[in-house]
Length: 295
Ligand SMILES: [Fe+2]
Image: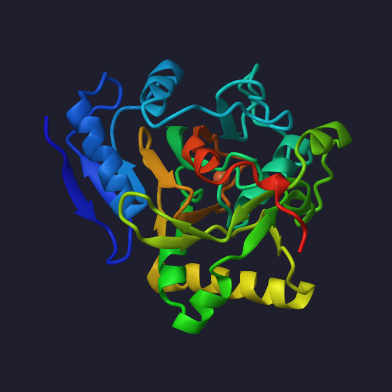
């Protein structure tokens, strides 16, 4: 088995074929996938749909899997379910149901789990049922955003630390978090500038959960976060993926943002299963960020 890799934009994103993710992968093949992820940030791998066990087995090769928050229908499992289908009955969930409201925040640019003390290395999303149109996922390169900055701007943000907060980001779409879930997920702090330990290339950890830069005024902080987001999402740094049934997409949460786009969720069925891989190396390198003193 050998991989075929096709770059989809000059900046990031590659389609990878020649691998069947339903089968156990030889180490050499997995190592190549890992290397290509570091290089391209987003990998699109077409194939037959995975089942849950196959997805877990593949995802665990990258690192420890996160457990999903209480607000997701798949809470307590390794899966975050992105779907308009009731988990038990399989029926379409009504528009005004809070499960659909919760998912609206997926339409904001974000990095999965940036609000957690251990940020995510990458996410694996597999398409189990896709609508006939709509429902694309868009990606934006936060590596390109960093690289587009002037040297002065780079040095200004070099040591910046950002507070990420899911209560804040869900509030942006008017979703009120149950208090006990909010209390269990206090804001986390991460360096704004991230360095890929393999390639040495830098990126910025931003997106909807990024509430503020610690020690900066509200105006300065918001202006910088908005400017970085605008750079990441500029058309030349972005890519939109139209899903085919069975596609698996892996994204590097350190180097890219993503967002969902609408589909007719009152008429068409959609089921996507996400596994999210933690990045324990960050904790080993930097320690626990909540311990950083407020400037
Ligand atoms: Fe997401």
